[in-house]
Image 1 (cartoon, rainbow over the protein chains, first blue to last red):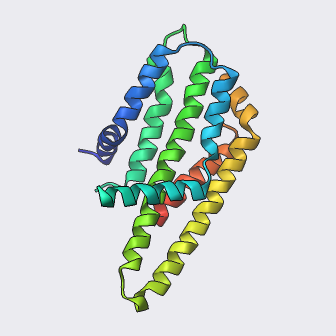
Image 2: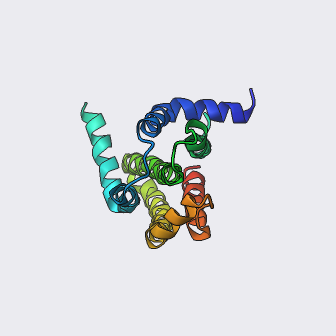
Image 3: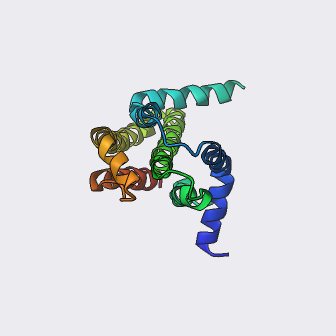
Length: 66
Length: 132
């Protein structure tokens, strides 16, 4: 198996559910995006470094306690 | 085990092609553009999530070491974080300041503006290299 095939397989295993959700979203919503959707999308790019790091710390602690 | 970030890059390529592959003529160009921009932002968010997880795990690993061994490793981790923080900040500024340009460019079928493309590649390359 080539490296590319392995990469594609791993990508599908790791991110398959996300891809599936996206396909559903595309099929379910073929309308042009609204201004609010664009704004919400760009808002996803504004997660601060510290907030992301704190969320990762919280997730790690939660997994230790589980 | 293949580095997750390589899988992520691969995923982004697949993901970016999806809107075109899975939509018919009825789907407006702007929706396709929206999904392509969404793929980029989602890809960076996944990459950063993996980076943050790596950082907090490294912190724990370093904290468990004998005191004498901690200093250099902790400083090294801080330096790495500083580099990623800077690159992530540049990506955020690029995408924020050119939000409208990104939207128009993608709706016209053009690639993402150069500064956004460079910032995205820089963040993903950096977090891949620093986790080695």
